[in-house]
Image (cartoon, rainbow, N blue to C red; front, side):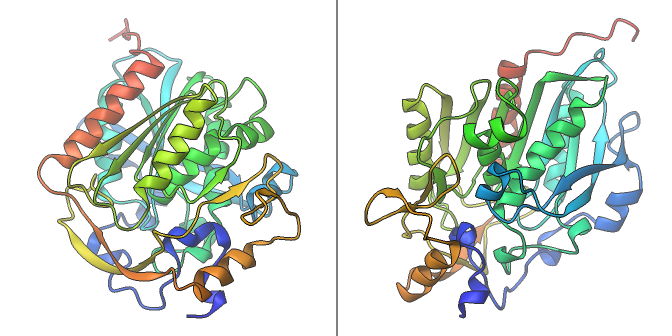
Length: 358
C-alpha cells in the first residue's frame, strides 16, 4: 500500500483499500440519479422534493478556520416538510456515511417526518463525481464532510419555513464524523458564527481519530454519540475520549454503547458481514489546536511543520493498518438506534407544535 493510497491524515481510521469486496452495490444503496431529480414518495401523503445545497470542498480543517473553503459544489439532496405541524419547522439534516445514501436513511427520514420534523437528506458524493469512499477515504477530505453539515445548516436557515434555532443533525459513520466536527466550537464559530451553533447532533458510529485538543462544542450544541461496542472499523475508545474531553469543558455530551453491535448497526437491510476495508484501531488520536495546527505527539505542542502526510507515512511505516471490518445489524438494533435518535431530538429541539389548520 502506497502513501498515496492511504489518503489524507484525517482519513486514517478507515484508510484506503485498493480492493474492496463490496463498496456499496450489493449492500444496498439509493440510485443517485433518481435521488437528484425525482420526488421521493415516503407514503401516500408524504413526499420529499429534490433540492440543491450550496457547499464547498475545503482541503483541511485549518483551511476552514482560515476562510479557505475550496471549490464550490451544489450537493443534491431531498427535502421533506411535515404536514401535521405548523411552520416554522424544527429540521433534521441526515448525513450518510462512506457508502452514500442508503435505504436506512430513507427509513430514518420517514420516521422523523412522521414525528413533525422537516428533514433534509444530503448526498455528499454525486455532485463531486464520487460514488463511495469505502474503498478510498482519501477521495474526499473529512473536513469537507464537516463543511457539508455546516453548509446544509446555512441552507436551511435561509428558508422562512424552518426555525433557525431548532436544527439538528443525524450523521452516520463518515457523516457522524462530519456532524461531530461541525459542532466543534472552533469550526462552528468560524463558519456559523458565535451563538449560532447547531442545536442538536446525533453522531452514529463516527470516527473520532482527529479531535480539537480544546474539546469544546459550540455553546448551543448538544451531542449524543451512538456506538456499537463491537465496532471494529472505528475506535469506541477514541469516541469515549472525545465525549469526556467535551464534558470537561462543560459541553452537553452523552455516549450510548449498544451491546454486541457492529459498525452500521442502524441498517436493517444488512445482516452482519465482513467487507475488505482497512482500519487502524490502535493508531493514536490526532489532535489539533483551535487554529487547525497539528499537535506534535512528541512535544504535545502545536507544530506548524507537521503536515498531513506525516501521519499517513507513520500509519504505513508503523504497521497500524489492518484489513477486514464487520458491518450490519441484528435483532432490534436498528429500531433502537432510530428511537434513541428521535427521543434525543424531541428532548433537545422540543415537540413540534400542532398544525391547527389540519
